[in-house]
Length: 465
Image (cartoon, helix red, strand yellow):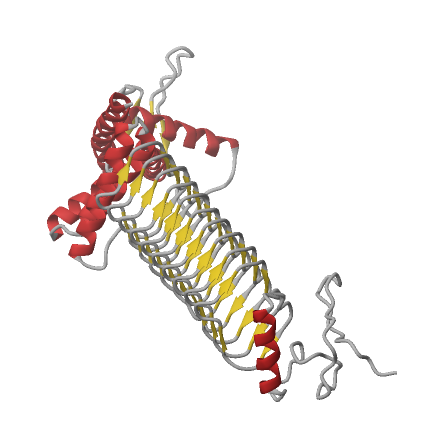
């Protein structure tokens, strides 16, 4: 017995179609659900117009074989396009959706236009695929906008869009450019785990609610210039793989950049931080611009963040940005000045890394002890035991034999190296030979320099704290 009703069922089996089977369908579908482009276009148009007149807005799973133009239409009731397929362009510009709108899982093979469209209730585009991009410029979402898991291949255009409810873009893949310049987010804006493969522009955007970019990835330009963040902002573990700019951005509340990666140039020039900020564990992989002008801008950016951190008493993080500021400045200086700054950097990290002084001191002591071990020191006899004979410690590098005496001799050389470094002195030990005498002089000079440098760097950090 032939089927009289369309065999379409929704993905969860809860929705079926009562439309009669189209005689031209080899798979038992109605004129709306039949997936062939060769179906009767005139019949499709006629029946679609009839549904619109009846305000029957159930289009779940429909296959639109040609461009669909709903321009200026007012949808007074709930609208359901879930799982629908638009084989050509879909135009919903200047439409008004008074009820709930469902485009979940919908596929747009060409451009989808929602220019200046009004969404009065919740608008669901979760899991939708936009092969030709989506244009929502100037639209208004009065309630929640749900795009979680959607994919934009041809660009996502939301410039000047107003999100009065929550804007949910978690796990969205923006394979084309993402343009949110001038957009207004009155409620929570969620872009966690979103992937921006091309440029991401949020210039002049206003975030009145929390803004979350947790684990988001920006592969190219990320521009937040002149954006305003009124509530808590979260960039934890975000990855900025291209150039990034927060020029003149304003953070009214706390902003969190924990474990954020900045792989290329980043600008915080004239950025305002009016509350707490956290850069713990963040990575700045490039502290030098491509030219002198870029380096100068980086220097000013890092200085701006450093000063903001100092005002809030976060001296540790401020020290990190002072280091980056010096790196950017070094790249702009002349050769002689650059050499001096290079030495200053490796000695103590521009005064911010006293551990480097300690490490260099240990290396100096160990290296000097090794030179003493192979070039000779004399150790006077033990006065307590009344042994007046001097002992010579002088080993050949090719005649070493592991023994207890060998270890004892190296410990004696290490001891002599330490007392020479700190200028304590030990009259019972003396250098033997020209090389050992030169080593004593050089180590003593380095010891004075490194001890003074360590004292200055440590005192500077303690006073600042």
